[in-house]
Length: 267
Image 1 (cartoon, rainbow, N blue to C red):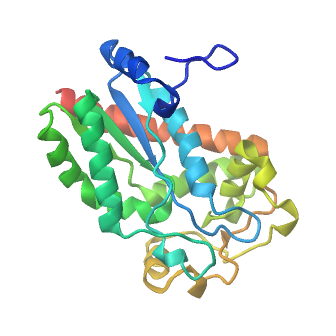
Image 2 (image 1 turned 60 degrees about the horizontal axis):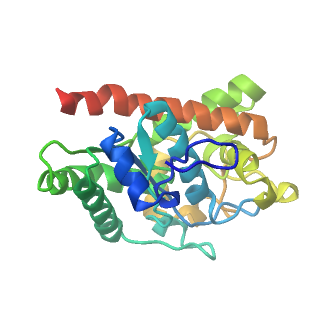
């Protein structure tokens, strides 16, 4: 694989040549992580690219924790219909997202990847990914019966990790609401600080994210819940905590693939 200026091997497939990908596969790197993000509003303080950028950052951390894994190009646009009340959001239908994921997975399977790990970094992608996994599995089995596709789809568990880390580090777990909050703002402050509008941070709809609120958001749209597009409160964001959040989330996601998914296929 290629090396960056510091001599570290790149895990990003798109930064490799075809020969380097082929060599990695020959050496046994047959696991690939596919981040599935979104381009949508994140309040007045964060850019539209939050979920796409965080998906990439999370994907590489998961790949490192899994070991012998590469990261496919992030799917940057997702199912964001519930954010369409805010300017700039771009959304695709669940059917379109599934078509893209299908072609991603089949392409990867044809090259010899045997474990394909889909990681949503946007709440609206969790349910569609969960629903499409059986069909994606059937598609890759037509290429290789030993190929496996899985997705991390525990949205509330994802947010619970944020709340735990923010509470432990800052004592501000109550400001985690699930969207453009102190957790996401801290992660962006860590990876892309130049894109964070610190002075525009303000509270949004406060309270924990639960099943009833998730259902309401998807049915009525986020603008019916919060006028500024925020669930939670981003004030108190901290880049150091952002790094811890990404690492903690990557650890849980990687463990879910390692213990509950990939070994089961290997039997």
